[in-house]
Length: 375
Image (cartoon, rainbow, N blue to C red; front, side):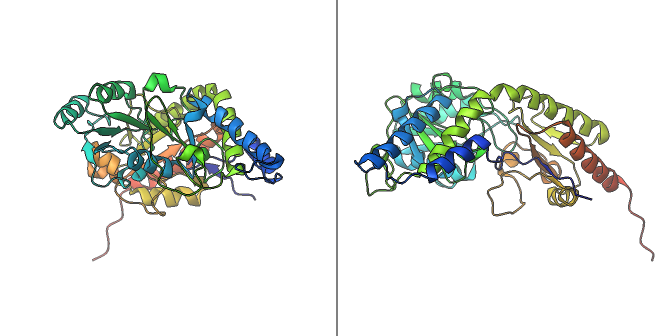
């Protein structure tokens, strides 16, 4: 009998969309460097520039602001390290690729709901007149909680600071434009949208500018050297177009997520949903089972064919304390028992039922008193 497998780790990476695969296969059949002036090179350049327009459309930005890079991590590094600002302020719940890009950055506190403390941010900006960059993600990759980024942008701009927004998890799941969020720099990653890994973009808007970290050939308007990854860029654009066209599907996904949480809380009253009642990505649930280590839950679920994670999936397979939950002052026993369940466009009711069957069985086993050992 074939084992049923249910993938609920879409925030780590999404399956490759058929549209992206087809675009990549077509691009792989091409020969031509986008920097060459001959016919094949011009054809490659046309493909890159058409993709640039599509990716820009995902966030309502101008195509000339799209800088193709190797992924969200490089986009974040280019934003923070290439901005030339004397001060960098990052929220305490940012992805590791932001926190580690500028380990000496000033931290912006969040409240117990995981929302940036706007009053403290304003005070931090006012305390030092040096040029600054503020970096706050649009939606958290672990909890799905959405930040008031337009308000953050207004505070930053009032003090002459740039605002960088890591929109890697939010893009393609919730609609937004650059004008709405007010960001000067926006990070995107293809594989979260159903594109290939190894390709992303930093979108530079308005009067913002960045200096290249990788230098050499002068590609990407001098902001990122190296021959463009034509198949990756083509796959990224196809995935972005499909994601934007199908974004309304996330209303259905949100209802599935809500049903999952309601059923889990009904089956295990001691369970906790992190960020319940907050505005969250419709596909993301941070579900805690106090007293049941996240690693135990992940292994048990995997044995039943259900794939989830604990926090970010970018920590070399490690399951450890979450800096996000720590910043939110989540009690240690709840934080230690928190798993992340993330849904996607192919998730259906059967997938939710499979998870609930496996998880509730585990919760009941763990709730049973252990027999006393013989003396």
